[in-house]
Length: 470
Image (tube, rainbow, N blue to C red; front, side, top):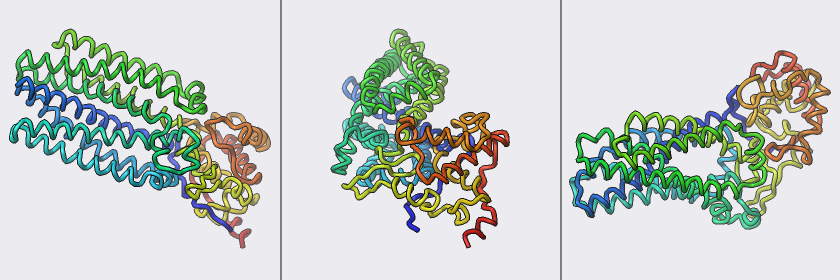
């Protein structure tokens, strides 16, 4: 029997693997965006201190660098590999597709990241120990290197959403994938908002140092952070509108009908709060407070970054990468330039369970004894990337989607008409496999609903199934 290069599915009951990745990614985004934005703001302040001969600004810069070392570069360095690990476990094929297409791009990103981490230590420990002109050059190299990591990673993130045009599917060229349709608005949007994030933290640090620097320098620093922050919020919102216009049609459907309205409201209110804070501190610098910055940073993380990461993950559906790898790891397009073949026809012919090497032998052939367990295996392997398939809460639970449907025939009739290539929602893969596998999935769902909508995620192969195989 032919097998495809499918991997086991990391099933996290209730919340799903996507939420686990989203939490780790949000921590990393918060840390990385603050550090990249701060690198630019601090290089600007260092230039100001050098040209205007204001040595007290260097004291502020050193305090901010220490904050970055403790906050951004510890949490960022831990959460970065955390994203790699969790994403690889959750969808090995998706990560494999990205690595095979962007291997040298990712290598360059790691080089820039190592340079960035090295430079932040060099800057902190050499401030005041080498001449100001040399230190200023290092500060700008640090800023460029930090932003370069953003420049590179955004190309990969944008490709995960969509190549943006058909050219890459024909050429397989790395530049056609990297500079896709929404690359530049995405990059400029993130670059703008990161200045605002760094500005909020910068105001809090300025307040802590207020007694140690002159009033003139204090006001100068606060106004600098405020002006850059205001520009970041305004330009970030403008670039978001451009980014929105480049999204594929399925993403617009998701935004209008799937993503909760509360997410948009929350993100909008956070942006208004940041803008109001910057406006007030630009007019009255003494209003900058650490106990205003910390709650704002928490709100940015909880109501801004985390929902934004969830929305960005949702916008890719039904794909995990490049509009050819589905969330459930099935490849649905031919890409001759990459030697990639559509797997849908083979799966429909051989059977989904049969072509997956990690499915137990006792479930590859469906029998009356193993039908429900085979259906659970299908549910976990094809559906759990977006649904809680064993419970009634959390990530789009089956128990609510099929509430009251305890008849296998009723569930089958619904799925057979809903999950077809012609009728499926644009954000959901259609069912791939033999009809008997769809019936097994229906039997599992009906059995789960009849048991109250909550069952164990454990798959047990009935002994009779092994006997049937013999």
